[in-house]
Length: 57
Image (cartoon, rainbow, N blue to C red):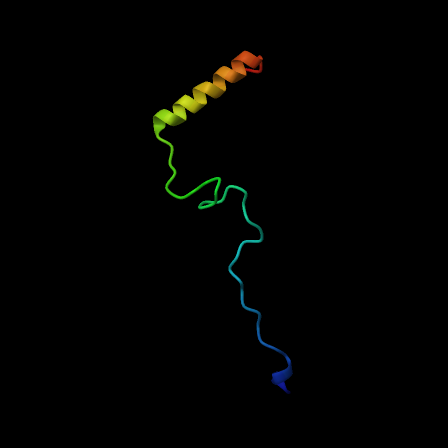
C-alpha cells in the first residue's frame, strides 16, 4: 500500500475557540490588577445600597 498519499496527522493548534471578553491580560482585566479587600468591601456595600434604594433587595 502506498502511504505517501494518505497525509499525516493534523497537529493540534493549542488555542482557544474564542477570546473571552474579560480574559487575563486584556484591557478590561489587566495583569497585576488585584483589588484590595477594603476596595472590594466598599464596592459590595455600594452595590447593596443601590439595591436597597431601588427596592430590589
